Amino acid sequence: MKTEQGRVLVVDDEEFIRDILARQLTLQGHKVAVAENGRQALEMMRAQPFDLVLLDIMMPGMTGYEVLEYLKAEPELRHIPVIVISALGQISNMVKGIELGAEDYMIKPFDRVLLKARVDASLERKRLRDQEQAYLVQLEAERERSERLLLNVLPKPIAERLKQEPTTIADRFEEVTVLFSDIVDFASLWDQRAPGELVNLLNALFSVFDRLARRHGLEKIKTIGDAYMVVGGLPTPRSDHAEAVAEMALDIWDEVARFNRENGELIQMRIGIDTGPVVAGVIGRQKFIYDLWGDTVNTAFRMQEYGLPGRIQVTAATCDCLRDKYVLEERGPVLIKSKSEMVTYFLTGRRSDFG
Image (cartoon, rainbow, N blue to C red; front, side, top):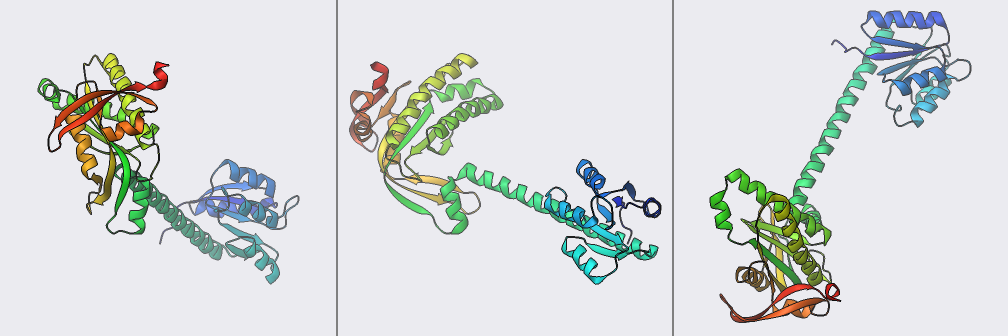
């Protein structure tokens, strides 16, 4: 088997030994550098990469043993294989060299054929270790990519549970706040624009909503066409879920106005909110989705569906959670599909904004 070329550093205080080793290694096709003492060798290894070091032991200033200790103490250098080539032939010297991290130990005067075999073997092991490390790095990058993709569709606590217990995940939450928003007269936007332009518009707008959801610690559930659904109070319960959702709803007002100014649009949103119990769980085996079920979800959707352009319509349950800190205006009884008449309210602002 032909061994690939390596970058080899020869470290020896005797010039004729350096020359012999350098000449032989160069004839074998390797790129060779030389150092006449341990300190120079360490400086060279810190400055440029090497695949193998041939190291003498008995050198003035810094012995080969000390070089090995420095190498193995530095994370950036400890992976470089070292073959000791020394006139010290006692077993104790060999053991010490191996214990300090040398990969091999040869005694001077060395046999050239044996040296070539050991250099080739060390370089091959180094090449295989490098391949393994590159493979592990690639695996870690793929794992992180898969993790990011999973977290794009599932809340982090749910993703962790799914990895630990790949069974049905379903939880009941006694009180959360659900928000639905949609674009008023979306059909006209659909008719007036090319598909790519429309998708870009929705992506830009909903990306803003995603940032708002993260800012307020809310969980985005999904988008359905031009509708955006977010919830507060799960998967990690929080007592201020209604306030957090109200803050996002008011911020949506501001962000849509800014979006219109910057892009020359006339987009209006309807927003509906309800507070109450839900069941939340993971659906699917190949394409996961974290979704909500229950009357609270249906009612929040109806609040949006039967709302008014540019207004935030909330139920009496949500109003009760917000009335101490927010300004709410009673709309009165509204005939809601599947609900008959409901008294609803418009969230118009924060009490602090009105003094």
